[in-house]
Image (cartoon, rainbow, N blue to C red; front, side, top):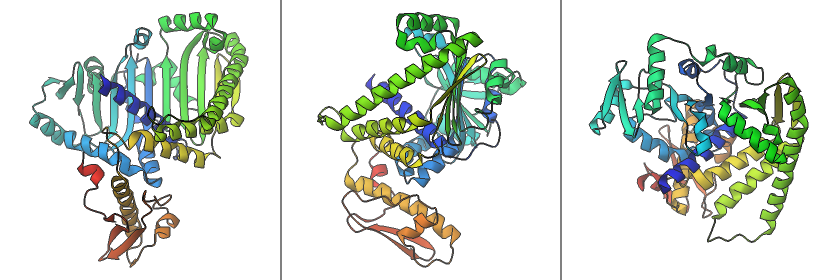
Length: 432
């Protein structure tokens, strides 16, 4: 049970990472193809630009923390999530399950390049049970959870019924969510067009009724009265939320409710930030890395506050935040998130040597990129990597060692004066 809770926390943090990395990545050039295999009639769709995240991780020198997880997945399936996956979509149904504290049914759609035969061969070698549907092997990884690679372009993972709906759509070329009136209208909005993170949810009647009861019982929740749909998008320096109401009058009345809701929220955030800065932290109950993550998140949200704009258009309420001037703060938030949640994946504490080895691997990757662009280079200074955009900033050894880069026969060597030369595999990877 505890492992499932831990996994959920990690997934939540990774979701936040995707959203904030999307804010500064370049816009997509077209609507995600993954939406074309999300069946019409779905209640919720989510899309994340994985390439944007990977690029952001590499530019921040944080990709080494993800390499451990990526290597595990590659060992199990042959899929390199940092290279093979370009996009990630989620389709959900049964949203009413949230009312009884249960998860909805759904499926993940990974978009990219997948070697179908290699994946199936690897899974079969592990003697994982499978069934065939639409000429595709569905490998059962857990109760009612299957994994399959129906083509070189898609990898599917989720509830069996949802995965089969997607396979049927791929086979028959039936109706997808882009033919759904609501989703088509949402994705056509300028605020939601070509963004790196998109999520859109149609609320079932039971959840609408539950929200209305809550809104009437608690003035703080009045914003959610008569909400029918919710969407959010991030990218190109903006973060947008959209609430679709039962009527134009409901949307117009929600402007003040939303203003009060968010102002109260920001006031509480400011109080929490002040309290966190003044109070003594019990180190036996919470790690300092988690405290740093919370602090950086609070500061980022508070800095977004001045740019908030709330307006009603027809039956919808738009809440916009501009984050074009907050790249440094978002980078700081992401670094804190990485340290607190992503780096420790595997339930072990990284030693200074582990951290240093991961740092050297990030420098090594940057040096490879530098040499690819400067084939005649005979030496590399750390500043050269930053100046040429191979790495955003040089990582620091946790024990104050100095990083040195040598070039021999067109290859780079990385060494720390405290922990020695970079090995083929870092301790962080070897100990997994």
